[in-house]
Length: 323
Image 1 (cartoon, rainbow, N blue to C red):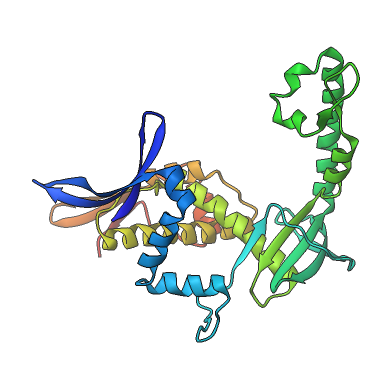
Image 2 (tube, rainbow, N blue to C red):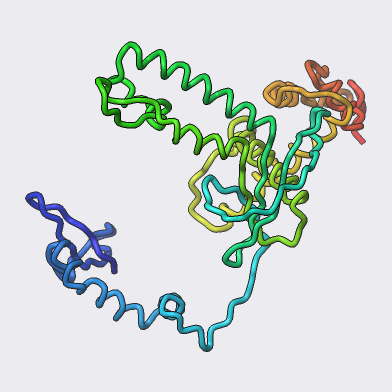
């Protein structure tokens, strides 16, 4: 059973309905008309109904006790792997200084970072400042402001529809309707190059930054796997098929990462579209002639030769007898 909304003559009504099957078709049957949504919400009847139903659900009981602050008899057990993720916006009050760190990049150059660890409300945050990104953010903002000033001279009415411009404007008191807000520019400049990580893992701030960089690489690999390796979402009808699809997608990710690391170790950086195309062309043909079984391999074209050399795998002979 569940609650469903229905719009009639401009009003919203709530119904308690259940799903049934008649003549092989799924239908919804109304059990009770709860009334207009505004009246039901205002009277508190919906909350009382949810509370009454929740008394028979263990998860709802635990959540209601936590909300009411009744922690007696409740125990919290941590399960699963440690978490590490980035945050877009978070307010942290901390005055401790940053620690300079140099992180080696895949291209050979180092990235200058300033890192500090902040703990508040039982949560651990790692605040990072990237000097190169800070310079880029400042340059991008100067370019936007310069274009905004030129646009203001021509007219300010069309600027409201541009979100990149609108966040730097404020209402003016003179002849113009809008003007550049210097306070907004100063507030945004404070966060140039800043990104925040949150984690419950027992690792150092430097390890957290390196692991988060690996997460970005994993996301890129998954996007590649969906596009190039043809592991796009497929609708399954059984749990076994779902597990098989996830396993194959993860196996493709592991193989792609291993192949990528071996190619980078020898300075070879192929396009993955070319790799898949050339691997698809690499085929073997079995022939039976005069009672002998002969295997013929297709020529190695494109990046195949360099790819097998980077992975230290020997290509089989062009013509050989089956074992």
